[in-house]
Amino acid sequence: MPHIVVVTGEPSPSRLASLAIGTGDIDCVYHFALHELLEAVGESGSDDGKEMMAIMVEGKRIRDISDLPLDLAV
Image (cartoon, rainbow, N blue to C red; front, top):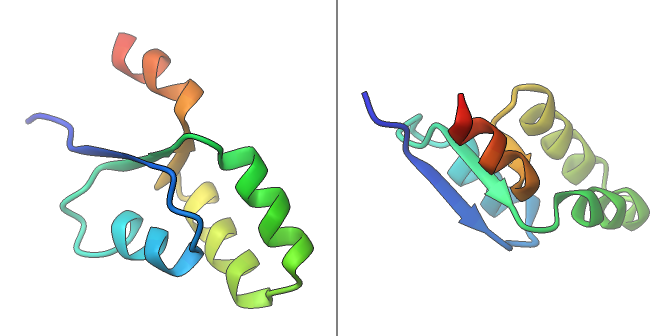
């Protein structure tokens, strides 16, 4: 079965969650600036945003774009 991924630069945690968690059709979301996004969400003070991002990262539903070549090699 082919892997279906999305590469994005979306800054909104709620929109990312709709892609990453959504219907389950997408295997993984790769973000081109995930580390910077996590830092920005942390500084924003939004508990909902922090929690949403933590769920996606810990569940491996969203990953940094630098992980994509390594994942393709497997």
